[in-house]
Length: 385
Image (cartoon, rainbow, N blue to C red):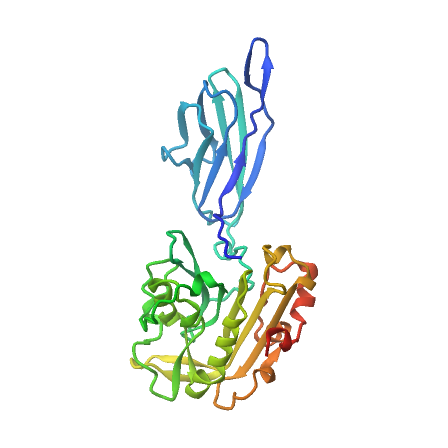
């Protein structure tokens, strides 16, 4: 299903009210502990108790990286509030660190909480619960980036697609994206807004390592989308992003407009009420071409695609909640040439085979007990091929 939930850690300080003498007041609670990852994070501190009390909250340990959002400092004071917001800075150290928050109530009660921030991990900003997301691979030439957009009728920012961009090839190793009717409807016109990634979103991918895609390569190769334009027709902005240089790969012109286009159409016909998850990517053997500015661009020797969805298409549950019998997956592997033509069935294969060929591990959030069986599936008929 099309769902996006904010990644907000909730740090709870329980404050039960019990009758003590003639009145009610919060009673002491033991330490509450939570752990957050190394990235900049918003933390909610939830309080309970007598609304007539005043509170003083202070970060007594870790004040150099944890502060109250409303004051920008390590101290907050005021009338009772059910929620206090804190802001944690990114941890760039190889060791975890700990903060201690102390809350004093005007009746003399004191409450504490411990917050641990994990040591720096290069994949922390990348790791999401998105079912289409492949496992992180460390490389000096890879930049991982997600492009966010707003869909028709909503102001909420949601993911458009994610890339593993190879600065050496100037081509993404893969592009991963959810496919659902909320991304394709209502249908706007194709924008043909060929451009560099403008880097209005982070992390930055320098223009100097991007292809110049305003004009074609001029060498028999087409500017092939990895996330297709037709998969993103909800809004103009959503479609424009598919024309970024970071989404392009040099494809044999006849292949791009032939069998590859047929596959893209068949993938859209496989959309269901539950989301269809897609990863499209490239494999290289050293071939290159040049863009109109003379930059060398890696030419994929092969183009591939892997798909995952629920079998019924209408479970209302996430992939992580499904068993192997409830899921279906398939892969496709093509040579990037005019020789790739004919029946799509001839190019279908298990997802596990694409993993073996590429070295990437797909759909990393599949339940461990289901992953092997799902990735071994090889049933084109289930996909109406």
